[in-house]
Amino acid sequence: MRITIISDTHFGDPMGTLVTQDGDMKATIGPQYPAFKAAAGKNNNYLILVGDIFDFSISSYKEAYETAKVFFLQIQEDQIAEEIIFIPGNHDVDLWHTVEYETNIINQIKKHKPQRPFRRSVPGFIDDRKDSKFQGFTLSGVTAKKDPEKTKYAGLFLDHITEPEGKSTPFNFAYPNVYMVTDNESVMITHGHYLETYWALVGEWSLKIIQEDLRIGESMDLSEMTGINFPLSQLACSGVGQAGPLTNVIRQVQRDIKDGKLERISKYLSRLENELDNIARFPWYKPYLEWMTDAAFKALQSMILNMIKEAQDTRYNEEFIYKKDVQERFRNFYNATICEIHNLNMKYKYSIPVPWYVIFGHTHQPTSWGDENAPKTKPILAADMKPVTLYNTGGWLKDKNDKFCGAEIFIYESGKGFSSVSIR
Image 1: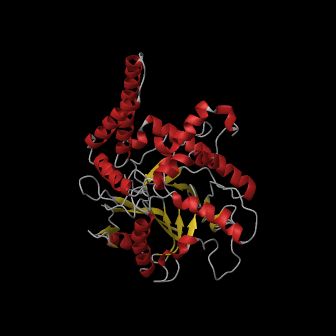
Image 2: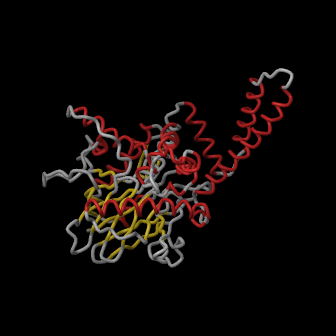
């Protein structure tokens, strides 16, 4: 078995380097593609895409799909991989929502069958242990096709992104994790956005405020975590990118944030404050209420600017993963992961060991496999003092200085184990 793993290509973002866009927004293969091709090699069993492959947050569906199509046609021509395993991230989680709709609603209606509830978490499982009866790739709880001439799980809408120009590309969707087990390692592969405040915010505050009314038991599993955080994820993933004229403004705001310029945002917030003042028509006690609302808005303005600064600090930030709140958020996510693994082992007899290695993206800060300085968390389980080591895929964008941020291509080969190739 041979597998290549990358993330954060951000197709649709003008700063992309695997696919670029000219002044007329025409997409062509970018300057970093030859390095990717050389490192990935040919005839991988799977190319695992670990989220933020499409960027629906700042580009229209049409633009993002057309840009991505250039890449998928090229890897098809170059015979990079037989199949793709897609783990959506925060910028393209809408793909996962689409998969859920297609499999549980639309396809069921076509078959005249009752619709099914969304699962919210469908883990992928790759087993390369010599003596395991589960060898290969499994989508947990998904019925595999019996036709040996066809792929086990593919056949959904994205398979056809390369048609009619070429044959269909088999896409397998898992969310939010893929678990990979070999005779030497147990590895969790995930995008990593649930380590950042915004993407986990609803879940964290729900536990503090709603508490017992959530009815989730003693601990939150991954299905519950992704479900509770769905509303904000949906808004930020695709709602903004499809906002017409507003999308162009937001693109500029995001560009300002990346460049560390907050003047435009401060200007918008000041105008908002003025508009709120104009519509606040109080009687004799107006001055007192106005003073209170002004103070409240100033606090809100400060909070918004701090949140923007935090978002600015996440990408390209070497210190992000070491922050106390991020470590705690990782602990919560990891505990939910352990809960899911336990349930999988009980239901399907997979015997997945607790993963002590994580491959993630999101921050665009590449970390090589085996790097002795790779980030490590404090022990997760009280019964086992072993820390978890985190390796990062980096990203394929140019940074605020118009410089390529750097990517790490992870490769697994049976008998050889994991390795990685640095692209700088």
